[in-house]
Structure formats: structure tokens, C-alpha cells
Image (cartoon, rainbow, N blue to C red; front, side, top):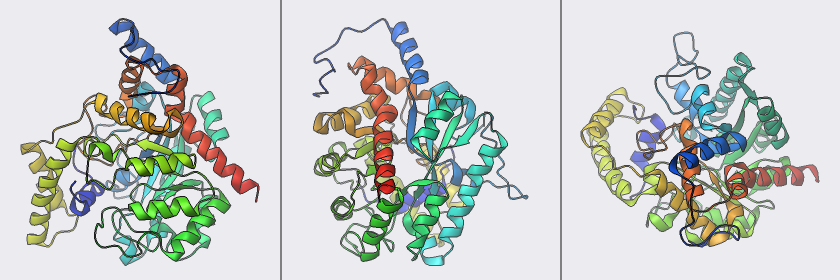
Length: 419
């Protein structure tokens, strides 16, 4: 896969880097035959609602607009590139992808972040309108469930980078009216709201800014989930102190496996999130999952940064993308396996229980680093199969697949409705 702008931006900016619930068997459980378990995992993937906290389809489509300003790929049909399209989503049992409304950090300096967010929301809504028998927008858990019953894939919306709010508190309510149901407060750089995990040693606010705390309160008021992925540790702690509702990490994994990688969550923060009822949605990219991939990406980052600096190139430069593609072809990253992703789920469950973990793949956002067995949205059954092999019950898997994030979503809605 060609590296995406989002992936290259993170490469250039990033720092280097079980005891289950009561109804999960201990030891090595007896399992059905391989064929039976494969069929059971596929059947279960179709029967339970699968919600994924982070799928970067909109910005990927924006990177390839035609002369008419329309996407050159039709995700209602099988596509040649990318990780998501309708046929593969149906095959994998994906029901509710949160479509990431991604705002690159440079828009914090150049302006236009809100306009970009609105345009990407427009794009997602248009995709749904053009294929109403396949897709529908979901502004609530109730709508998501109804869409699933009608055989449609729901598009929920999450803004990745609160820079879209710009410096106007009223824009929080604007995006709520547009259907946005979570906002990641920052991305790869500190912004007006919060410090970012990738800016180690360059903290602007030592956590949240005063405006960021106002934004968290306003998100609580209007019914938008607060997403702490990409935030510095201090910022996450301050979100937990400020928010009156549970929070999510829409696409983060466990720092236990990647020491020094602040983008993942420490055990302390996982416990703190769970204490407030929150959910950690495990990202699938090998860079989140595997220390070996982290080390490879550190060298990749060094080479890409040197190439970009020597030529004065920006992350969206075609020349830089071509160099990155060539480098990865000649030096392929060691990939995690689906079992490694399950290890991160196990770790959260061991720390805080089955009610605080979910799926947050980051499909379309991590370039060519997806694990073996989880290369696109058709392969959720592979992860479900591993969880079944490890003794997770169907009720446990339903919580992980959607029940936990739906609970938080509904709690946030209820809090807003009570005010």
C-alpha cells in the first residue's frame, strides 16, 4: 500500500519508541476443531455488532480526488486499494465504523481546519446518500442498532484533531449538530486545546490549555465523547479530572508492550480511564503493537526525515511519498500478528476487566504496517477466532466488539440530555 499523508506525518513527528473476566476459562481451554472454530468466528462476527473506533477513509479519499472534486474510488464497491470498502466490511462483519474526520496539524497554523472538517463530513454524508441500501449515518446508538437491523453499515463520525474547533467554543455544538460523536483533542502537535504525545519535551500547556478544559466541559454539555488518543500523559490525566462523563481512547494500545512510546497508554492511565468508566479501543497497526516494528519505524523516520529536510519537502510531497514507498519496499517493516493484537486486549482485561476494551483499528491510517491476519476490514473474524481460542465467551466478545463503546456513547448522550 502507498504510505498515506497521515502515516508519513506521524512518522516524521513521532518519538521512538492473563487473568480474564469471571466467565473466561483459565489455563488452556478445550477448543473445537480448527474448521469449527473458523466458522464460529465468522458467524459470530456477523451476529454481533462490530464497532471500530477509528477508520481513516475520508482523508484517504480526499487525497485522490478527481478533476471534478469527487473521490476517484467508490467504497460502495470493492476497491483496488485501501483497507475499507463495502464488500470487505460485509465479509468481516463490520457494522459501525467511526469515520475519522482527520485534520492535519498544519491546519492549526494555516487556518481552514473547520472548513476541512465540514467538507469531510459532507463527503461521508454524500457516500451514504449515494448508496442508501448499503450505508447510513448514525448519530446515536439507537440509530446504529436500527441500521444494523436493516442490513446497512453505519457511518458514525469522530473528529481527529480538535483544531477543527479553531478558537470558537460554539463550534463544539456546531459539530454535534453535524453528527460528530467524538473529538480527539489534538493530533501530532500541541494545539489550542492540548499537548500532544508526540511533542515530548516541548509541552505548551503541561496538559490541557484553559480553553481545552472549556472544550471538554462543552463536549460533556452537548453530548460528544472525549477522545484521549494522541494526548500527552498529563493532558489525559487532566481530561479525566475535568470530564463529567467516561472518555474513550479511540485508537490506542498498551505501552506495556512498547516502552517509551507515549502514544500508547500506560497501565496507570488505563486504570484511571477504567475508574471513570472509559474504554481503550486497541489500535491494530504494528507500530502500536510490536516493539520490533517500533524500532524499524524509528530508522524509517530517520531516513525519511533526512530526505525531507535535505530537499525541503512537506509530508504530502509526492517525492517524499515515493521515497517512503521505495524505502519500505526495500526494507519492509516486521509485522505484528493478529495474536499480538489479542495480547493487548488481554492486557487491558487483566488490568481493569472486560468492560473497558474495544476495537480501534486505525485502518487506512497506518500505511503498510497492519498485522498479519488483520490487513483489512474483512479480517475481524481472525481476531475473534483468537479471542475464542483464549477462552473469551460470546458475551465478552460482544462487549469488546461494540457493547463497551456503545455504553459510553449512551452515557454521554444521557448526561447531555439531563442538563
